[in-house]
Length: 264
Image (cartoon, rainbow, N blue to C red):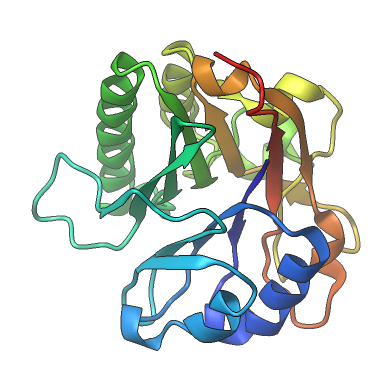
């Protein structure tokens, strides 16, 4: 079973890319971020025509997340608990049944947090604390569970082409990395790093200064697995070739393969 995440940076601008990639790779479940449209404006028909069930949590021109699944959803729920005043469309979870067992996938678009000296950075850290609380609750349930999306976190120097250039950025500040590590310390597995410690495993290249051509990238799109899910991990990878397509998103898809035929 293949599960993937992709910050498409506007679904309406990147629909052709999404459809081409879906046909090329045939993932079973997809988490999308930055769809940048209201629910009613999401172009669901061509995606449904490929066999996907579609659920969205949209917001006009900003943010927005979506879940696509070849399996029917047993339940879905938008929004991350912990702040009733937070109206940003950044979180959507779905539950499906695989071989009689539940699989929960949470799609997230974590706040960027820049510039650090503004209210945007405390909002990012508070959001990460809420995510920690959510993960603790889900881990207590001992279910197959995946956190997937654009975390806007560079976990370590190995995840950035030029660490010095990002030293003061909200994505790489010590407090940001510490809260990401706190998620790992709960018992979650960073799927990509579970299968490779190779350098230059980037998922984002800025549009400016020839970043793609120079491979001046960062890894900020992640898939974190509960122990019950990581037990079934077969492979993980990055579809970096998508960044070379005409008028691409600045992010590329990240995916995992799970063997859910196995028990446990």
